[in-house]
Length: 192
Image (cartoon, rainbow, N blue to C red; front, side, top):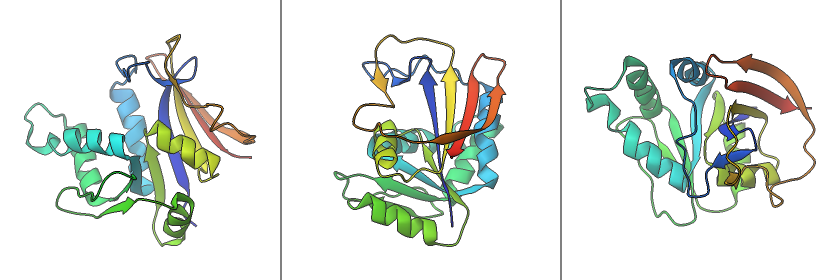
């Protein structure tokens, strides 16, 4: 059965974004880019919430024609174009992406839809960013592996990943740690 891998950046105090959705505190360099892109071999489906999907489409669909894009960015854009994109939204009427691959829209019954996707043949699925969606998926116990990149900063206030609404007893096992030159620490947890 396919697994669901969630990757997200957090501040040391557990924020996914500043109080006004600021993300300028996230350390992201070529080493972290390479670490994230190493999932390409394991994954053939990405899962996003509406806001993350709109942001990703607005950026990654422009990368191939942008002369300032790096080769790593172009490679990731090609990969994104080829994989299945799953968008979870109750407000979107449709979702489409690029020329290849397919885009699926989940409007309701998230647990059933993800369970059905897990049973299809293929590689693992990657929840990328999308903290509100990730909270819903945590509540429904739909995530098999958490890749949490702890950034060396304290925001003091902001949007937390682990909220009262999403919090529940989740026994996890530390599978991997990685220290990056930027000071970011990559933690990989799997179900205990």
